[in-house]
Image (cartoon, rainbow, N blue to C red; front, top):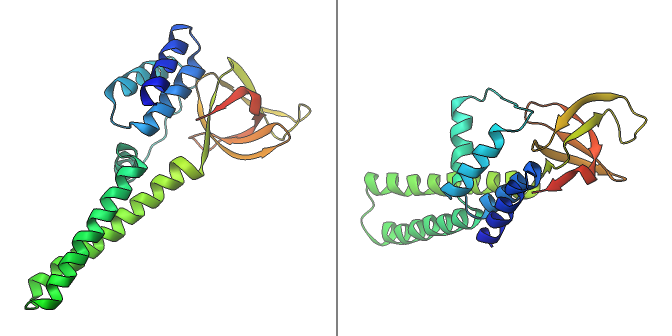
Length: 193
């Protein structure tokens, strides 16, 4: 299905429908996060969007985010199961053999590895499967202070911008941009990743 999503993204890109193309590339990236073709096409499209939002993120947080987005949820699950299996085998070996300080240190390191991989798994799930994300697929959209056409205009966003959908109400979605700006837009102007 990654190839299908990638090809749909290519089709939208050729039709100059940037928002739709970005959405399908993002969907493909969830299934195949290390695919260089998807990343390259996404980078090209992101260079052409009007709203360029840059956020200064501390190095350690960007490193964690890079690890989380580098692997799929299934890969994290397999890695966690492997670490647990190695820990159990080593625990058995620890109790039937001579207990040394070195063996105890390895046992604690493997336990720490289980905790770290579990945290990465949790954040991967939360980032990609619990937070609903969308891409704006119309050329320009008004962001309002509430879920109604009569509410005041806060700012405008343009096609291709990625946002978190925090809340939905009567055909409106409260969106949060990467820079922290929030407001309400019509859900019909967004496509869910």
